[in-house]
Image (cartoon, rainbow, N blue to C red; front, side, top):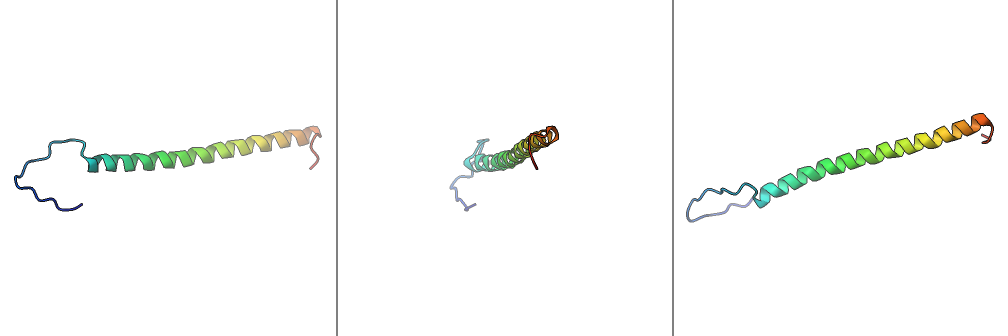
Length: 66
């Protein structure tokens, strides 16, 4: 990001620099948060369907008055 001046030009041989680690963490966090939102929506819809199925079955048996 910022220009760094070196007196001697030595190539950086480190594979995992702080910048690379930050980029990896940011991309992984994006994937995890997107998947978490998807899983939360999926679980919510499944719970809603289960409640609706119980109400429909109860109404068919005459236990629940609609």
